[in-house]
Length: 180
Picture (cartoon, rainbow, N blue to C red):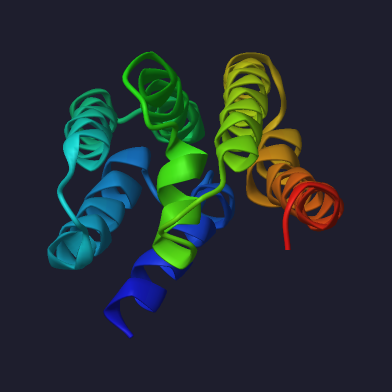
């Protein structure tokens, strides 16, 4: 249940920022988000990526409180994408790849062709996080609050879902072709 609430808070972050913009001082919005974030902290597995994300998120919240500015809050999706890109890219440099690690949770003895496939999928996710993070940055800096929310709080999740679904379809075909 705690993990579910953590995911809901993370997914709702752009909506909370958008709805609060202009109605609540950025400083107060940042304090509210910091409280929510800190209450969810115990549910997180503090691996290297999550520790980096935690520190970066606290830095953004601190900057928003200090400057009473909305921009640091709007940069949160950039930080999340950067953390994910960093973790996925690092796993390409220091194998096994992130997708291979995830696949091995379900199937500990992966066939050799699957290892190459999971590496390619990890590379695709790296491209996704780089592009998504760049768009998140552009919307934070130059787009209206409504466009920022639409992309970061809605469209980015749709695109991620499409990538998950497409990869699943390709994976099913790959498994049929290369192993039972």
